[in-house]
Image (tube, rainbow, N blue to C red; front, top):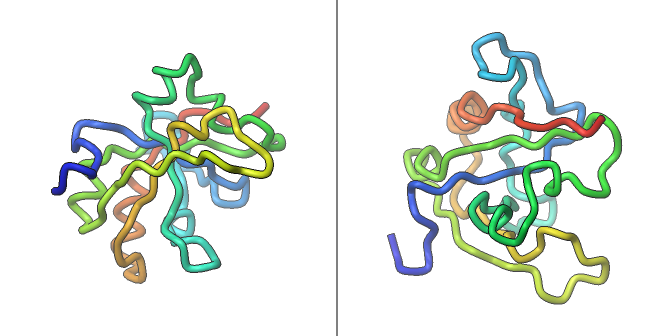
Length: 135
């Protein structure tokens, strides 16, 4: 791990489209992200997440991550250690020049690594309960 990587004790938040929120009786909240929620962006850039410690440090909370999203969008929580276990790296990447700023831009980070393995995405999904759903 380089000095620019996020600590293994951190937790990430990821916005999840309603269609990718699935029921799972084994998840602490009864819902989790589907494996399809753990792909890199369509343009090839690494997957985006938000760092929990920074989200709370700037006076926000898990619901803030979904600010501006429609009813049914979820927020999944994934421990950074789980990403490390799956050969992924989490790197801080605060957004500083967005055309439309988001309240959590300072907490933004990227998950870098090969996500082509369906089994890898399934293991990440099972470790990512939904902790908030936009009402």
